[in-house]
Length: 336
Image 1: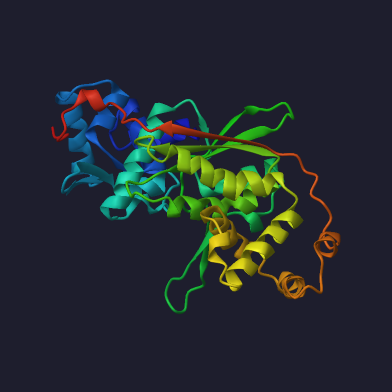
Image 2: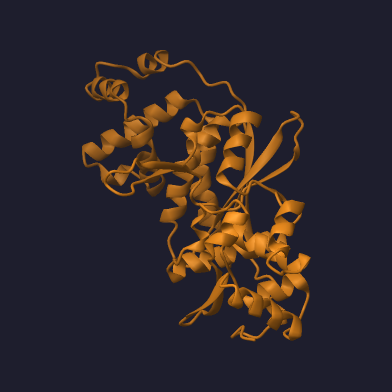
């Protein structure tokens, strides 16, 4: 955690107790939203004077508001710009209003944080950039990024790690380097399209690391098997193989698709092709493909164009059930 005495002092200046201040820091940093059960679980309290006073402080200082969603219930939203500014979190999107799907995912994310308070999280974009650039020696060119366009006369803003799924660092490995754990929280939707896209976005960063862990989190285990298959197809296999073999696989799948030999292309092949299209989009690869497809260039000639990647990587994947924090402490409606 990056929580410092200065953060606690800042929040205490608004009249919050040390425990309330700690909880608000966690909310502002990781989710922006919380449910009553999460506050009660964190403080090990029950509804009464203590919790009523906490909500009264939030409301009277206009630091938070309540939002009620059909079929989901009451949610507390910490939105005050001045509170985020005092914590150095003013640029976080947590303080803005969002749709229910976003809110649910942030609540899920906060459940994970509360269940693992002892983890050393990379909490902000600057912390993540510093870790990968300075500790791991990785260029920001491989970071997952998104460009935001403001007003017509404003410069576009490039932001990194905008998904903000929990990312934390374990102790030093046998190679004396810390091991970072990435995560993904599955939303309620039935398909894994967004998960596949997320992995593809991070693959360049994964490739630059000597090792890492990845945790897939969901409320139930229904997608665990498929999630593992996707991870192996998009991440494990490409990282454990020579890139030139990936290029030749892409050529083979692309040729079959171009020739409308759809029966020869599996679902895993399509996922691989969709990612490889971006990875091998340069003119050099296109020129090689045309020669290879026409039979003018052989597999061995393609291999001779690229030196082998001898980097050894240690990659771990785990799937875990995401459990609600403090769920037994309040009723389903979660109202005072």
